[in-house]
Length: 182
Image 1: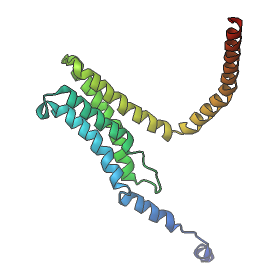
Image 2: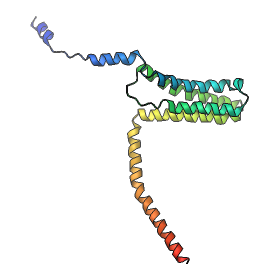
Image 3: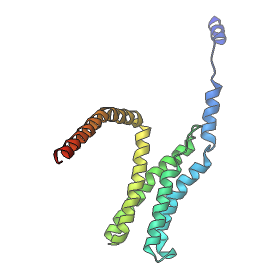
Image 4: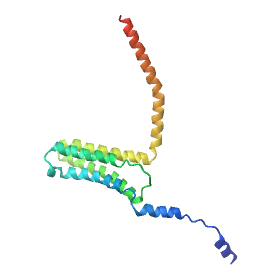
């Protein structure tokens, strides 16, 4: 009986804030515009590639349209994050980021085997843009941003004196070259 009283009077901290945040994180999409455009440009480029012959006979128009859609996709999700993304947004984002380069890779092999070589450049551009985007986000997710910043800052600080010394030496050589030729 005494043990039951001790258990009843024990202080228990309840953290309702994290439960509410977790429920909010699972419940809705906080960035619907970014989520929509993330998928819109990717899917539009794929659909345009598949049905381009139906819309236009001009290869150049199709090529430019698809490259523009891929370029818009490349820059559309670069939104400043003020609020954390939800689980649904994260799933949509990563699935779109991973599945689309796989689809472009399938297009690569189908274009290669069907010998539609003029479309091969477009498919390679699609793979390149989609893979670069995927690589960048994976690199940021794994914390590569800090190591990149360190490498860049050490490169800049180590290379600036060398470049200045090289310019000074070149300027000095030019002056002697000019005076020696007079």
